[in-house]
Length: 471
Image (tube, rainbow, N blue to C red; front, side):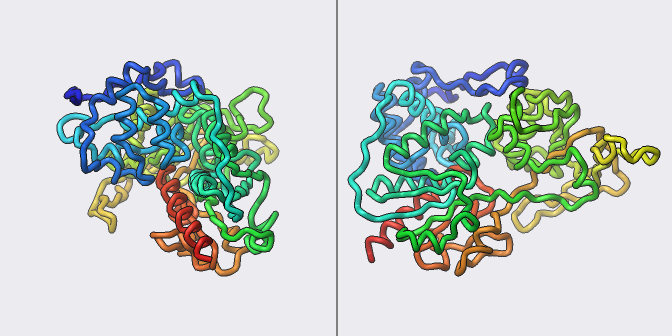
């Protein structure tokens, strides 16, 4: 009999006044008692609408049933039938827009905390089970995976479970892609990512770092080396800028660079070899999850004032509600319905050697109002003439999206891309315009969510298996 309590069991968090100055994980996770209580809220629906909302089709009612029975390891096994990164997904997947959005309990009250339970199960396994999975029987076939982000790792894991010898080629010095360079430690501890990667290595996945496909080795050379198929999951690491005056000033970052310096290179540590500006007043332009990550990171670096500058209203913010709430609790100032016009730099005409020359001292913005809906149904922001004003800042972080890196296309014959640089694929298979080459994740869609990238990797793995076996 399901528990009829209308609200989820609350997730414990660090106090905002404390966490805004440290990089430890904000959400502390469920206790066993809370997990059992939350699992009891599941109705175990026969038609399982939640599963249809999951991009990797985890058997959600089945794993929650095992949690309710106290069989946490069995719950983990059910999750990992479908997902190679359960501890990651339990933390950063937008469940509220996917599986939980379809939960019947959400009709009257709150949906079951599916993501919180997935995190609990994965963390329980990592704490109590030290044995790594056994190496599957090998089938004698080789596949190369370009990129070790969520799509690449998922594709590699699914193929390894089928017996393929999989080699993952990563451009950076650490595996994990956006999971290690893009998402801050306080949202996704890097030890968690490494644990998931170690599990994949136990399945036989080989990971080679510091390999830039298109420069170190080409896709053509991978086929020459005996790989029978290639999956491209190289992400979307090319930052976008607004094209306004002042974007080349000292103190202007792309969110990609700012977060990479902190998350991957640990610039926030005193002994870090990678510097990052410790600014006093920071403006982050944008309203997505990456903007929230950048703003909250700036606070933790010691900024006194951090502003989110976004041209629409709070209702249109694309970031997860949870991340917006956490940012507000920590003291981020949301300047909504505003848009930057130019970034203002310091200039001392009397002393051209003044080291302050060329540094950010402010950002001019214009106020906006919402007009008619655009092609996607969102009300279009319209400038209010004469409403310009200046924010005093010494650092500006641009977080208005990223595009797929053009390197692979420019060095790989036969790949067709769209106007934004995304690789064009068959949606049902991930197959590209080139024989034996598949792609998925942000390299195809542009910047999107971790779980959607994982779903694309899973789709491509199935298609690659069918392609090689048919030969």
